[in-house]
Image (cartoon, rainbow, N blue to C red; front, side):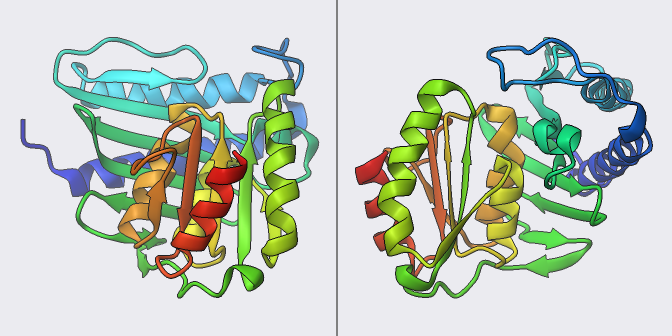
Length: 258
């Protein structure tokens, strides 16, 4: 089924901005619910309201599309198109006011990502991509950094804060930090889009969910980032990204430790 992907991107961006505005407006009155998978897996009423805003609008536009969404508003579809949504990636940052977060929307046709949007509400930055059409930030084209040597590279690190993954991440960081320029811990989507925009030189994510990385991964690839995991493609278990010149050294280092 043909679809106007530029129009899809524009609507997804509009919805991400609307959800981000809701998050800013309700930050002082949010209510935190019970943890989900573990004590550090928190959710607020704003996560849920943001997801509902996005899913209802997408369903109104394309009622036959499937939806895979973090906070439980998913649904089956019959069109062959699947929306993958994280309404608030970085909830702990949002609740504690200690760092950035984003709204993430991706559209798949079968198993292939076609459209992606990641919106950072505080900075009012909207990163987006269409498969084969490049990546942009607020409408301006972005590309990956030139890739300095690993010893000078700034590397983003993302991981789920459950006990097992924290132990795994600690091992990777112990091996990586002495040989790279420095690291930054970020929510997974922003890790990938900052890499796409050349703010980071490399990034890695451990034990994510598809909604954490689906949108950011397409934006990164369209900006020229090399992505992989255990093999030639990234997975939710391990996602590694880098500027092309940095990829051999960075991927070898991370894969050996992870």
